[in-house]
Image (cartoon, rainbow, N blue to C red; front, side):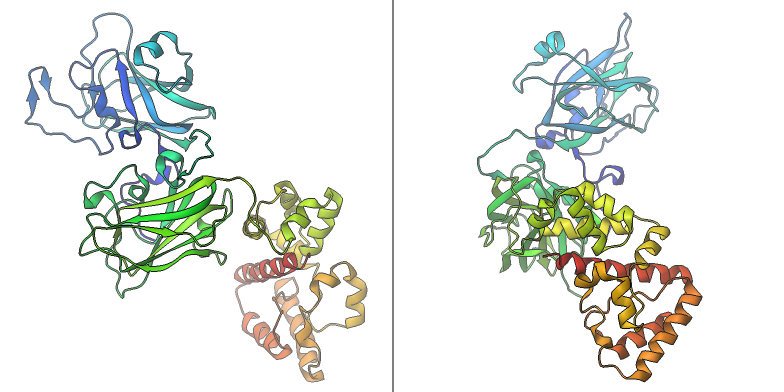
Length: 505
């Protein structure tokens, strides 16, 4: 995947809640004699022209107060474009060298969205987000925020005076609750682009900005693929919802719009972006459609959901200016015709623990899965099963391996030893049935040699494999590096776990 140009890697997945692009406004400040407070929230990086002056002094792209000759410090009150939980603040002093604010702090409050700067100055109850911190001149100054409360406004304190080029307030949007149809993918409603196959010409966050794109560079555009293929972008909706239609706009893309596009969706709250890239359960909700240059098209959704994520696929490459996902917020779980999620959620803790340990013999995996109940969807259930598994250590994997029979070993002994998992494991080694004595003996001998080399039995997801195919796999893997082989065996265990989960009902 290509570098996400224009998006700070440190804050991927977060939104600049104060950006003027989503309605952020600098309402009031103590002093902006040299440079206006509104510059703080401009989306573009600050620029510097050494030749430009105003009637008050050097023109600066930022907020700059006069030199303070009285006690106190300067401040600026900002209305966030959308309320949210602040995770980090960036106070950028770019181009302010001998005139930057030497210290800064940031406070937050909750107030009516229509409150004036004067009212907030005199009446707001401010809580500290970033304590007073030294500022490095000519540099971005980044501070993490531990307070998880939602805020509507922030106050930037510059101590005692000077200049700050940009203020970025990175966080998680908390839009107002509604039952009306809204654009669930919109940045101002909490939608966030997570990852894309490519974003060479413009950042992927442009795709969900408010309003129509004014110029081509304000959309999402990929480079020319060689050879032509398919590009994609994955978005997390601001909140789960049922979709009615998708709007795709190609405004200002004329000779470089995609030829075709399709939309996929799934439901997994809190899904790690890396797990979504090649996820097998994406559901196509808008079939592949032809697009046109500098156009807007409304596409009906054939399966409404609810969903938490969307994937836009474009063929072969090009630019999309905006994506709108129109729908109604809905926190109910999606349909599960198999009944698996409802079954697992409905079990007592003792019953669920027993079901999960029959699925995978790692006790830490079982306890982690129990803590995640209730599950919201099949996608989440299987996704969390894999995520938890790959977050365990070698000892946990080896523990799970001990709950498997040796392929080709004595059937009667295996029935006695592994009676608890026999129902779920039925058919996993069915390829051994009817195999010749010669192949069975080779499997036994191969398992013995494998265990002597690696310290654990040969693990393979044997469903659908013949005895001969299993023997071939064993022969292919027995010369592997031990550390690599442990991870290969863990991958086979993950497949077995998924298979057994699906057989719980």
